[in-house]
Length: 178
View (cartoon, rainbow, N blue to C red):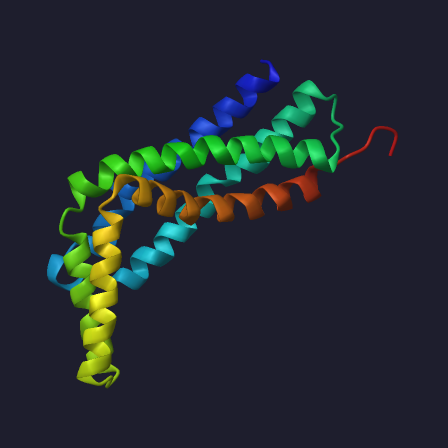
């Protein structure tokens, strides 16, 4: 298997894990549409990202061991990890652009209701709550733009992958003769 196939394979696996996790774990926090556990959803979402992006480590290791005879510089390890992250991130974005409108069409209003109830429970004044709700509505309206949605979704996953690529490169770097 050549290096491009290794990177593509692990990027595709990472992206697939991310998308499949939505279908597997969404029922945990979306089981009651009136009382969704948004905090659990966020926790499960980021945990899924970390698990899925562990493919960066395994992909760089496979590349190092199969293509580089067990040796790789930090730079090459990081750049190859970055390629895997980019592939997985693109799959994540495309998957979200399909999943969100088809499987979570009521999410914006449910999330806004949740946040409003949380602010009221915290004792914020009506004026502050109204202002925050207007800001959220403006954001949700902006998020309806597919370019904004794609960009925001990319910025949700990519930094996590960037950190994992960095850590993987630090762990896996191995110079020849050392």
